[in-house]
Image 1: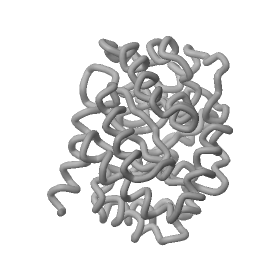
Image 2: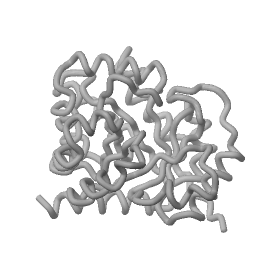
Image 3: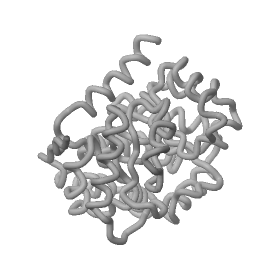
Image 4: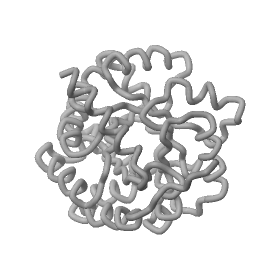
Length: 269
């Protein structure tokens, strides 16, 4: 088991070390029955997903917009969310490197050590806590590290340079640089030069790979951001399809995958 856990993290590291930008696809756990959910993961992997983010459903996802909020509400009605998230991870991780995305309240409810162990045993490479409280960071990093999980970190766009060493401390796997400071599902303009400057600041603060998501609403926008990062993560466009017309979700993912290939990262001093 320990060897399998270490291999999951190594596969993620290897993927993000590639010169080409990778495509991450966010999928909330528990939207559909287990068999249908597995079918969706299979199709999304075939459509071009290089890695999966699995959303651990939460009652008050305050960083998420209406589409993902709706998905989480549906998932919460469908049964025990931790068990359903573990089952989703088990299948997704057999296909692609997989990272769980969670809010701290969902983790603390069960206990960080228990949750980290369950996700690691299911095959996750890591888990990213979107709103990790500063006073709980050390405990979470110990729990995750002890289970063999990497601990990606979301870095607020407004973080000043003086705060970056503290903000990125303990991060492994990747740093998440939001393309927009809005909620997930933002469909407005993205200031690409400002995002590029932000990503450059992150790269100067750490050697951890950088991925971007939030507000990457179209394949064309993904293609513009791809040279800046190790991976582009899409969520709302796929989740919207999974909620309304699941058969279209692979086509949505494929349109983003096609836009990214071949897209190579810029080498900036």
